[in-house]
Image (cartoon, rainbow, N blue to C red; front, side, top):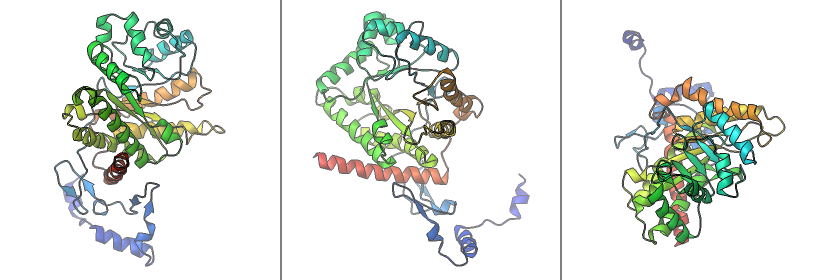
Length: 385
């Protein structure tokens, strides 16, 4: 656009916009239009940088009172063209699961997920489920810690060394957990050992602040438990993964997924983690609390918004449930996979380091969520003491 053309229009201050807003309200107070999120965050009605308290990465602030985020936002670290497409396949029988897995990997999926399905009872079952799958090419995610032992029973030393992803979930048995971390460090140095998920909390109605505080509290508890057993902080922190569910408030979900990165860095830094060990592998998964059984096709719209929020927030991996889950089929699984492929290859969101960075509204929500979640986390820690 021609600069001379823009020069014809003098810049408008926030005060000018407020005058215009008051005029349109016939004298009513613009403050009456301020909305409040379930987290208690005030949402200004008039988009303008001076209406927000926006952190920047230089240590200053744009507008507002000069507040800054508790810690800088981690840049997105996408490899191989984008976030990992980590779709679940709800088929119990290992052989049937394998056929569906090979099909979806051939058509754009980039990670293997062993969730509630398939049902695995032995290394033989696992081999059937993963037949023909090159785990050096596809990261593997599994909640059942036995999967690591089953892989060791059938894979070569080189195959194990090439594993990526995360196998395992939180456990109160820190002695056994410490053994798992030590084993993984030896046989599978690129593999995570614990995935902290907020799926239960989110799907039962937790607000964004509560989810973030839970993640921090759970992570701190694991760090303390393993540090007491002699593990080094830089050997623990990089092997902890986090899964956050995506909900119905588009901008709040972007902010939540962005805020957790800075919060995690601040929490692990307090334990002495190096800068590289503070980086979080963040997985996002579509939630269930806002999905319809009566009109399941509307869920396609919800899933698309959730996937876009996760992409704009810069997650490392993403699972979108089928729109008609749990009664899904190959067609509905394909739609959920293709939503992600379209975002990556047609919207080209993977070309940007921080797609949502600089947005007045998103930066404000990220900052507010981070501060409130950190305060909630400190309250939990205080009660623990």
